[in-house]
Amino acid sequence: MADKILMKGNEAIAEAAIVAGCRHYFGYPITPQTEIAAYMAKKMPKIGGVFLQAESEIAAINMVYGVASAGKRVMTSSSSPGVSLKGEGLSYLAGSDLPSLIVNVQRGGPGLGGIQPSQSDYFQSTRGGGHGDYHMIVLAPASVQEMAELTVKGFELADTYRMTSMILADGTMGQMMEPVSLDIEVKPMIDKPWATTGTKMARKHNIVNSLSLVPEELEQLNFARYERYRTIEENETMFEEYLVEDADIVLAAFGIAARVSKNAVDEARKRGIKAGLIRPITLWPFPKAPFMAAAEHAKAFLSVELNMGQMIEDVQLATGCKAPVYLCNRAGGMIPDPKQVLQSIININGGEN
Amino acid sequence: MSTKNMLFSGFGGQGILFAGKFIAYKGLIEDQQVSWLPSYGPEMRGGTASCSVIVSDTPVGSPIVSNPDILVAMNLPSLDRFEDAVVPGGMIIADSTLIERKVARDDVRVFYIPATRLASDNKLGNLANMIIVGKLLKEIGEYSEQGLSAALDKVISAKHADMKDVNLAAIRLGAAYSE
Image 1 (spheres, rainbow over the protein chains, first blue to last red):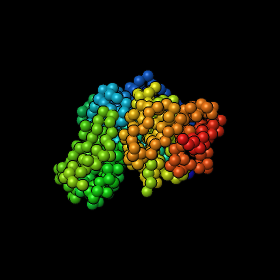
Image 2 (spheres, rainbow over the protein chains, first blue to last red; image 1 turned 180 degrees about the horizontal axis):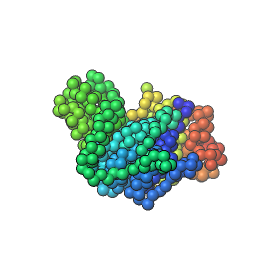
Image 3 (cartoon, each protein chain N blue to C red; image 1 turned 90 degrees about the vertical axis):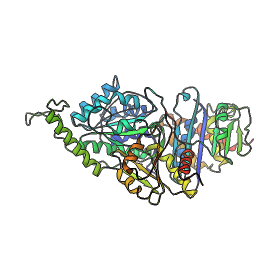
Image 4 (tube, rainbow over the protein chains, first blue to last red; image 1 turned 135 degrees about the horizontal axis):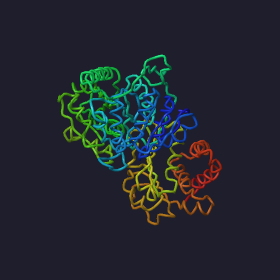
C-alpha cells in the first residue's frame, strides 16, 4: 500500500494519460470533469507537453484530429452535453481511422441537464456517438485505479485498432478519491506508418481523410472497419464476475452502479438469495459470453443503471430471452441506493426473505 | 470485519472536505481500504458541503454513504438533513457553537463540542474541523499521536507546511475535550 496515493478519478485519468505518453490535451471546461483539464494545465507545460483550452468542444475535438493524424497520443475530455458537441469530430475520427482517447464523465440529461452523476450516454457511446457506421471502444471504470489503468489501456487499444477509445465514467467516479497506484505498465508504442509526419522526399504522401465519393470504395472501407471490429469483439472484451456461478438472479451493472450492486448482492446472499453480478468493463464490445453462460442457470437478470434503461437492451440481446430481464434504475443525476437494488432482487425472488 | 461509514457535513469553508480527506489518508496509511466522495453540487458554492468517507478492512463497495455510522454535523442544516439517516447505534458529533438544538434521537451516541468557539479561543483560526476530527478519533478509539503527523503530511501541501503544527494542536485539543 505504501506506493498508493489518494487521487480523484479525474486526476487519475489525467496522470495515467501522461504515463501512457500522451503529451497533447485539448479541452473545454465542464463539470464534473474539469479536474482533468486543471491537472493537464498544471502538468503538461512542465513536461514539454501541450495543454490547450480550446474556444469550444468542437474546436477541441478537431485539434485531437490534427494531432492524431500526426501519429501522436492525444486526448480530450468532457461531460455529456460537451460530448454531444464533439459528435461530428468523433465520426470524422472514425472515418479517418485515427486513434484517440475521449473521456466522458457523464452528468444527468438530456439537454444541458444537471451536474450530478449519470449513465445516460450509454446508447450514445456504445452506438458510436456521431453519424455513420462505426464504433468506439467504450471502457467503463468502476474504481479510481481502473480510471487510471483503462486510460492506459484505452490509448493502447486505440493505436492497435486505429480507432477512438472512450472512457465512459460518471460524476461519482470522477469526483471520488481512492487509493491508486500509477505504476502501470505501458506497452511500447507501435509504428504508425500511415501518419502524416512529412515524406522527407522518401515516400509517397500519406493522406488522412474521411471523404470518399466512390460508393464502391466507401463500402469496402466500411467492410474493412467492421472486420476489425470483429477482431476486437473476439479479443478485447473485458468484464468482471462476482458470485455468478450458482446465481439465480444475475445483476448487470457497470461503473458506480456496479459498486452499489455489489453491496446489494452481498446483502441478498446474507438473506439466502443466490444473487450475482456481471460487470461489463468494455461496454463496446459488450461482453455477451458471460451473459449467455449465466442464462443457462439464472432465473432472472436485473440491469441496474443510472438512466431510464439503456444497457438492459444489450443484456436482453445477449441472453436471448432465456430469462426475464428487469430494470432497477434512477435517472437525472440520482443514484440507486443498495437498499433499492436489494428490494428489486427480493421482488424478483418472489417477495420473500 | 470492520467498516466505518462516515459523513462529514457543514457549510462551504469549514474544511469539511479537508477533514474527510485527513481521515481517509489516515486509514490509507494504516493499510485500510478507503474512499472519499465529496458533494459537488451547486449547493457547495456557498451552501452546505458534505463528503462520504469509508474506512474498511475489506474492499469498499459503493462509496456513497447514505446511512452513516458516524455523522459529523458542523451546522444546523446538516444536522437537520442527516440526523435521521444515522444508523441506530451510530454516532453524531455536533459543533455546539453553531448548532443550538439537541439531537432528537435517543438510539445514537451524541457528542457536542463547541469546536468553532474552541478554535477562536485558542487562536486556531478556522480549524474547528480538525478539533472535531480529534474528538472523532478519540471517541472511536483510534486516537494515537503516531498516525496524526504522517496523515497531515499527506493532506497539507508543501506550500502550506507551516500549517501542520496548528492542525496538530487542533486535533489534540479536540481529543482532550470533554463536556
